[in-house]
Image (tube, rainbow, N blue to C red; front, side, top):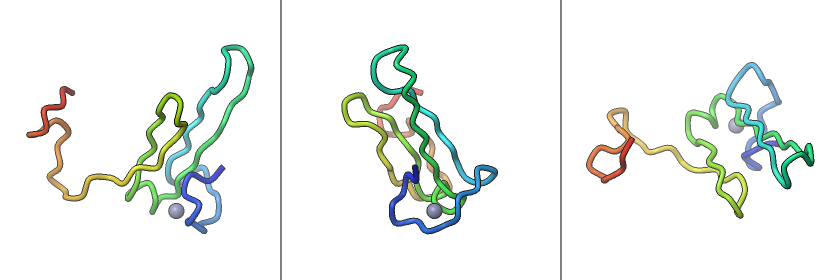
Length: 75
Ligand SMILES: [Zn+2]
């Protein structure tokens, strides 16, 4: 499935970001695919949250963004 419903790019697994998640009970075999096109992958990232599912998150802006820099987040 397309992670960004507003995206109209044709599906191309060679580009962007394809994420496969296993959901439901272990061994149920249920697998969901989420895909971001190249342009979306540069603007967003996907984060899986238990109970909420896959969320489309905007990437922090700025080229010099460093995770954990000044935000108290341990890498
Ligand atoms: Zn897109």
